[in-house]
Amino acid sequence: AQKITQTQPGMFVQEKEAVTLDCTYDTSDQSYGLFWYKQPSSGEMIFLIYQGSYDEQNATEGRYSLNFQKARKSANLVISASQLGDSAMYFCAMRAPFGNEKLTFGTGTRLTIIP
Amino acid sequence: GAVVSQHPSWVICKSGTSVKIECRSLDFQATTMFWYRQFPKQSLMLMATSNEGSKATYEQGVEKDKFLINHASLTLSTLTVTSAHPEDSSFYICSARDIGNSPLHFGNGTRLTVT
Image (cartoon, rainbow over all chains, first blue to last red; front, side, top):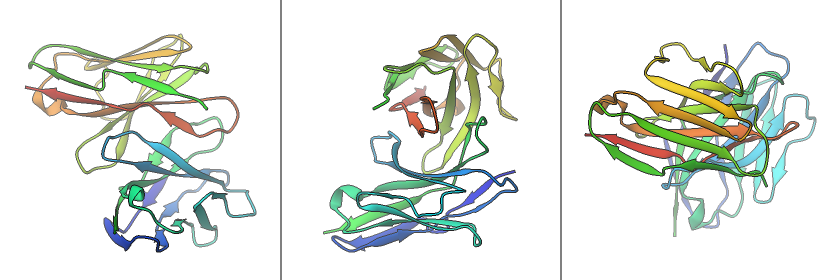
């Protein structure tokens, strides 16, 4: 069984500072995918970044980067130069081996950017 | 990019009535779609996997007679909440995946309120 743990229910960060959102996972699969999604108050789920278990380099997408430490089973999201629009819920999720497309989500972290 | 459209965005219905929610992949074909449920301030929980042309696969604890899923075409899956009750009030969100190893794309969700 897969499990995603996000230990930070809420975070407050000053605008323009960098922020790290923690995510640890547990799985017995060798091949898996890790995702981060952003959910604003309007409810939609916005894909941010993806890391495959066999990817050697950490994923980056603009201001988002994923600090992937496979041995520690962690996949932290780093947002650089935070903006007011970054205020939202952030979910870490895992997908099982290719062919099984279900996502297992963590409990989420509510990020609030302070002007 | 891939777009998933979900309709309606919100619905209020009386207890005992049925409500249908549509999920459409607008620019890609989705043989598999997923239905999630999210209670306030909680994470997304997978309800069922919708398979085009065959029966849906329900997660443990989800009543298949209560939550009817139909995936009649490669671009449309519907979730019908039958004989809705106040405890069915929740945020329902669908997702689908395009070809290859792309991430799941989510609809904007449907907020169901049963009075």
